[in-house]
Each structure stands twice: as structure tokens, then as C-alpha cells.
Length: 330
Image (cartoon, rainbow, N blue to C red; front, side, top):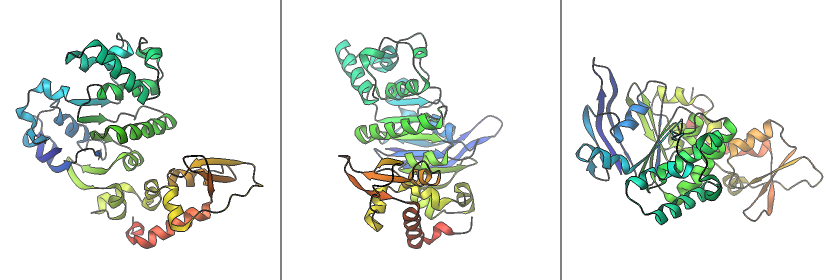
């Protein structure tokens, strides 16, 4: 869907921000651009919608060279979300969300129906919030509006530049979950810049790890954690790669491999979580002693059993045995 072919960006003075990048973002996938500050993540992202010009090489979108397309038409086909949400303070929420459909000449009824559907997707009432202004919303609500504005005209491609980076950790995690739920429904092709390793592991179908404008590895999160291609990748993801890998596994995975323990009805201090909850956060709950027992439920809130620290450790040892590169040096 989006193909980078020897894509290069060199600024005046000879500074090369992106150097000969090659990879393809498959249709319907989220690819996260990850790496240290100054590695070229945002420059590469902005080259897709030509906010940055290409010095050499090419970027094709659905088979068409981006440089051959009309610049304005290109940008209207690409949703763009930034960290500060970019909402216009003098426009209502509905006006903000409907900017691109307005430019495309959508009819009033069509815009209203689209606005209400998008607001429903993020759990906000179109009728209640449509006439409000950005300053009347919380930071998390504003960021949700920024996301659905990018979705308003149903673009096939979305560019997201650290879209949740300014939010506090609890709200950020909630919005990440909401966005992944939306993505399961809309299946956009997304290029997503992040500086956060945990966010990249959680959000990405694949990760592009950059250093000095060059690709160090392009792979699935699990492959990067299990089989880092070089020392830089290994060090970037850290010595706790085995723990990080638990983000890629759910309680359901654990249940299928080693099962759950029985619920102890005598324990009063409990937390209930869904079977699709990831194992890393589950282990964190147990280690932080947020409850004496974590009870697992299914979609119908039926109790399936309970989970313990020992159970998670047992599963982790099973995974390490199956994938010994997780415990390589570094």
C-alpha cells in the first residue's frame, strides 16, 4: 500500500535525515516508526504527504508515485494526526471534524450522519459535544476528536505523529485500546511515529527501527524482541525483552498453554479482568499487590479461573524455552 524505495531526504548543507530507506506498509496494517531522537522518524512520515520533499528515491501509495499526484488531492486522501491534536480553537467540534468533507463538498445530511457515527465510535455524543469548542473538552477528549477528524473522509491512509504522547499514562493506555478497537473495524493503512517502546509493541503489526536515518530492522514486534538483527536493536529493546514480550500475549494464550488456577472464594480483595488482557499488565497488577487474587472472565462475565504470579512466571519460562534468543546477552 505504501512503499518506500531508496527514499532519501538531504537538507541544504548536506545533512541527511533519511538515507536510502526501503520497506512496504501492507494494506490495513499499523507500522510504527521507532528510534532515538533525531533518527528521522517524523521526517520520513512527513515525506508521505509531501510536507517534506523527497531528495532521492520514491514513495508510492497504492501503486502511484506520490510525486506524480496533485499535492492538495494527495493530502485530502491521507488522514493526519499530531501530538497536539491540531484542533482549530475558533471552530466547533463538529466543524473541526468535518473540515475535509466540507472541502470535498459533502452534503449536510451526509456530514451529520458521518459525524454522529464517528463520535459514537469514540464513545461521545455528537449531539452533546458537536457545538462545543476544543477548550471545553479534556485533553483525552480532544485527542479522540483529532483521531476521528483524520478518519472523517474515510481516507485509505493515516499518518500519526506521536498522537498520544502528550497524554498521561492512564489516559494514553485507554485511548490506545480505543484506537485499536476502531482499527479492527476500519482497517486503515497506518504509519505511526512513536518514541515509546511499549506503545510500539502494543500498537504495531510491524516496527521500523531507525538510527541515523537508516533502517536497523523492519519486523513484527515479536521477531524484534526474539531475534534482534544486531547489537543496536538488542540494546534498544533492552535486557528485559522477555518481560516486554508479555505485552504480545494474553491470558487466553496462557490458559491454552498451561491453564488457570481455581478461584479461591475465601479471598475478598480481588480484581476481575478479561481473558484477552495482556500478560504484562496482569503481571504488573500481581507484583504491585493491587489485589490478593486476579479473577479471569470471558465476554459474558463468566468466571474462568484465576491467575497468579507463579502462573505467569511458568508461562514466561515456557516461552523462553521455546524461544531461547529472548535471554541472549543484552
